[in-house]
Length: 155
Image 1: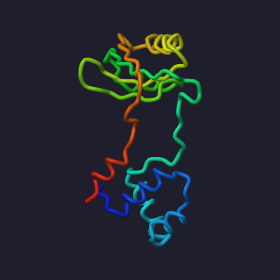
Image 2: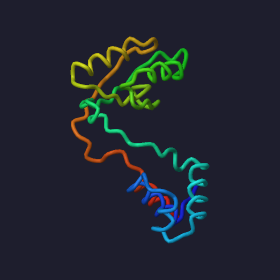
Image 3: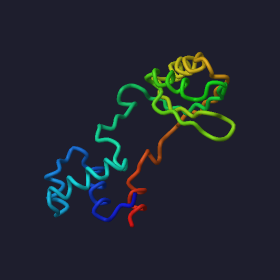
């Protein structure tokens, strides 16, 4: 889906102030309220905007360690059953199927290094996991972001 300048301005405004209402968006963007609502509905329907929930910082909840764990799995039953089991571990924030030497990549959090070992042990104990390799993130100089991508997709 292509986006135009108004879509980009709308997404940028919502990115900067996620709690802003449609009426205030229309006022700041100098367009009709109905236009803003229609644009939002279209962006949501086409899957460009996937949510309006709050962004949570795991460190603020006491999860100071972020790690990326690559899994090598038994491929007899595919990724889905294992992905479902990984999804039941609260510290597993994301799971991706990947190419390369591993089969799945998980972003996980833990309270400290000892807790990280506990979470990795939970993952290793899951049926289908053959081997893991972990990398601890030291810093996040570029956090997850999508606004530059939205700007680049503008027609």
